[in-house]
Image (cartoon, rainbow, N blue to C red; front, side, top):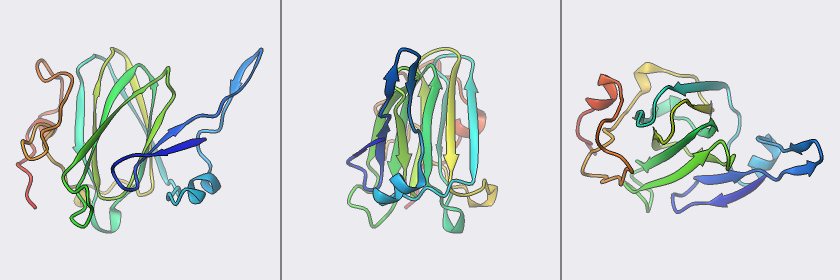
Length: 177
C-alpha cells in the first residue's frame, strides 16, 4: 500500500500497490503492521457497506465522540463518491477545515479518517457502494453530527440541488463549538 498524508493531520489516502500478471492483479487493502508503520490505528472492529441507488445521494456529516470516537477506512467498491471530512478537533491546526477526495471503483483509493473528524459523501454515479471499516462499534449516544451545508464549513459540493438524503441528515443543527 502507498500512504499519502493529506492536509488534515492524521488523514491519509491509501492507494493499492498492485501485483499484476495475465490473470489481473493482487493487492493488499489493509494490513495492521503497514498502518502502524504510518502511525495509523488499524484495530478495526466493525465493517459496514452502504449501497446507494441513485447519483446525488448525500450521507453525512457523521462522527462519534468521547470513548466511542473512531477512525475509519472508507473505500468505494462500485461507482464513485465525493468523500468529505471535516476536522472537528479543537486543538488541530486545521480545525473546522474540510477535505474532499474522489473515491471510485476504478481508482480503488481509500481514505483513512482519524478520530475527531466528521465524515460524509455524495454519490457521483447511480448504484454506488461504499465500504467502511471502523475502530469502534456504533454507539448512537456518542454521535455528534453536523449539517452538510453548514456555512461555518462552506464545503464546495459538486452538486447541491435535487439531493437525496435522510430527513435526519438534512436536519442537523448549526455547528456549535
